[in-house]
Length: 258
Image (tube, rainbow, N blue to C red; front, top):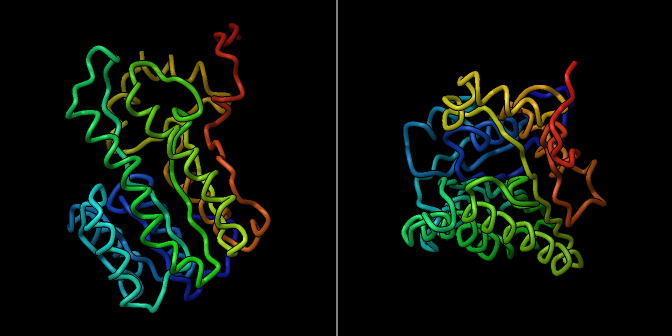
């Protein structure tokens, strides 16, 4: 999956939302680099599919990480198996479309509890172990948390909150040797986005905003995660890194005709 080789042999990694999409790509990338990976999510079948990349080094754990008990159980399972955790990737997230007048209490609750509460619970539960290991906490957020996005008030608000949480934890935990960063992907091809990307009209409008003329692949987000968790990023903390094909480089004007 990657060009570079990182020294992850034996590293203890926990990834949430690891059954599909970006989370599966991140978990697979760490497995390919020799790490032991706790693959956490709600659906055993998809988690086991991710684990098949290296079943001898994968720990499948089914949990609802929007709930504190689910998060605590996932962290405890990894610590029980390996004696600690070196890298945590908070990837599980949810986006529900709708303007501010349309978003229901239930929709807001779903996005807030998974995107924000789940990340906070995971950081709180894993931080003692990351301090002991002088490890790394990495959140997968979104460029929607760096600015507004059409009809995404709930998603943008929760992802912006996670970005601020990451920066605050970075300054609080740096003295303990823990680095805390975020990756903010742009539009990425997953099972959830494939239908929109396969719509020619939507694809044309999207590409008009992308310097690289295409959506990201999940593996490209995973490559950034491998770097930020590695010794090569030893002096990087508190960063929210856009991996967005140049989306946020634009001020929003349409691309001129060729």
